[in-house]
Image (cartoon, rainbow, N blue to C red; front, side, top):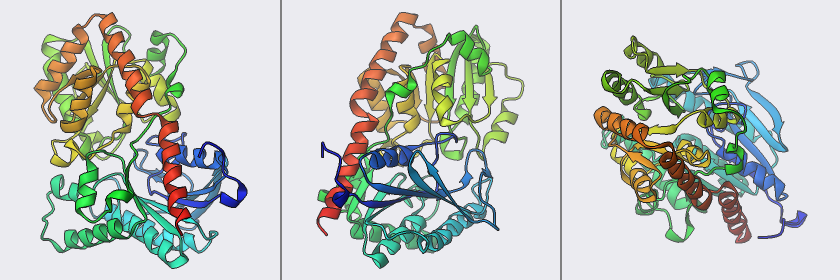
Length: 420
């Protein structure tokens, strides 16, 4: 696999992920980065995603009268599909998923037959439709497991295991694990979970979210960067850059800011992004001067925002699944930027941060613990924080290098196609 494939070995690949983003949009860009690598190796790649960005909560290109839009981003073919909008996680979110799945069926009739289809969760209906298309056209299928549905709906949303809705999703989940030619999981702790539910061990691969560290090398005076992004010049700044949803537990950040306001006012928390819980968070934080809310920034601007900060924040709800089943790309962004981190996730993520000495940890949804971690990080000498940041950068390059993950992903696709 060291040499680029010849034209005879080039694959036609579809990557289906409803929430795949391009660098000009906020959110993760895993599919874009992997697609770029594959195109550079001689393969033809089409990414199929929704045009509805969950952080901006608006359509960028499509509309009901123009439901499929074709484009090209850095030699990657793209198809943006219309999906109904939603603002909170109510019935409209499920309608959004269903509408995208139906549009996927329509879009498939307009594309050249693929050799391999990658169907990415969290939404099982979308992945199932992608698998169904692969079966109909005789293509290989890779199931990429980003979030463990329906387990997350049980652990976080309180859905009953015995409900008809969950039973249907369990059946879809098992079929996908059993019938996929390969299963890719982003969280190492998810390997045992998917094997227990039908995935074959020899076809299960851990390929985490990843980062291109060189993209996080930012030139410029930190004070100028802070001024550019509306951050205080004379405070210790902790930055969170990402979605504002129920899973992100950002209420803990607001509560920690309230605690710190009384005894450590020099610590400032800055939250960049948007999502269903943002308005409530802003209202809860009213009157606090040591926390600020900022609009989402494109992925390409995230390195500047992190470079302007002293530490990166990662928070999640206190859910059993998150202790073993997440691969948080924003954490790897902080690593690549050479910043220490403060995480309140628990389980594997907290263990990694503690063992590598790259920051501080707190238990999830523990505002007092989060405040203690922020206080401790702020009290360190700058040289000690710099040393943490260097260790974080080394960890990011060693374990989460984007090039290495993309090459491993390509090997999975080529290997399963080769056994046809």
